[in-house]
Image (cartoon, rainbow, N blue to C red):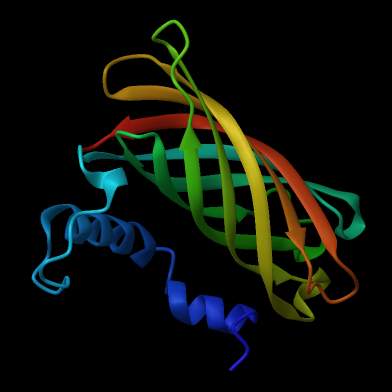
Length: 197
């Protein structure tokens, strides 16, 4: 089995609807010492002082290297952050508008996230490294392809209230297995992040 194929990533991650639930249950198991965890092991130091879970939605505008297309759509994300500013992020993005010749794509990513200390108690910058897969629809729906994606990125959260932040996020994507060549894609997203736990 090729662990770098899009099919392997899809099998490992499941559907976009299952990703937030998986991330939350994984962190809860680590944090609470789930019975399935090995007995006698100490809790990882990054989780010693607890963690927070936040979720949100953004609107994304992207440039796709395939045909130099500009395309937009909604996205959703879940952040799990420790008190030591190291965390996990999972995101799903649907680039659907406008669909010139029916070209669109859907991306699911997961990865590590590091938040630096806040500035002025309002600004929270972060960097992230993501990996996952995309489903790309070729012109006139002649074909669909599943491809592995690697995506470094970062952004800035601005605190509106204790629980709500405005997010501006940037990402550069590498599609190394794309049908014709390594295809780049990049974009900016903005929306709201809400602390749920």
